[in-house]
Image (cartoon, rainbow, N blue to C red; front, side, top):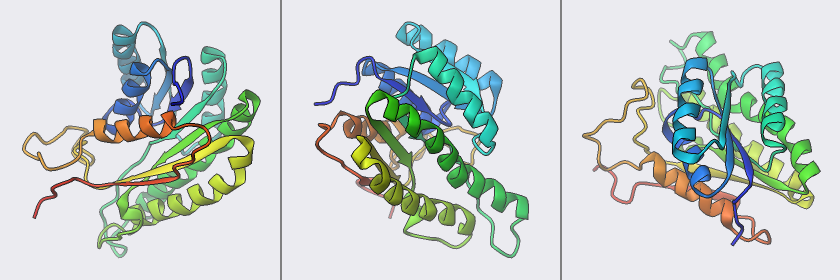
Length: 240
């Protein structure tokens, strides 16, 4: 088993939902974590809470992953705070539930730029840092919507389909640099996605953020000779 103790990780979109669950799981495993989100107040509050639980191993910064320059500055800060980077989890994402005919162009751009361009910007910054450390892991949080498109989800599905292709290509580019690239494709997760971040207590059949986080930890703990590149994760008993 590959130990995560003393590993350094950056998790995007990590003040709530799946990202926060992954950050907590990494800290529980002995790692040091840098979180980010677009709200400075949320980041500061979340870092304070994580450090109260885990003894000062959490850092963070406000960052919009759609802005390449702000992403670059964030990675520079993360390296100063943590000393390097071993793990990147690209989790930041936005939803889109508009028909193509009615969708504002701004909604299309925000979805593609967050869910796909943001992954590129973060990976672009992370790869040389990981090479400097002798290797690392990049895990992209996708969605089953990337292969199972649905009406009203053109922008979201396109972004997650693009993430699959991006992940597959990147995996082949950097595997000989000892950098593993994996992507997780969850189905329905009770995160409050599109509901102001609030879970629905009446939705008991969905996956929980902690289920996705557990898969991420399993991927990271796999022996370095193994590259589990793709995981599809579904509720065991979905709503009929």
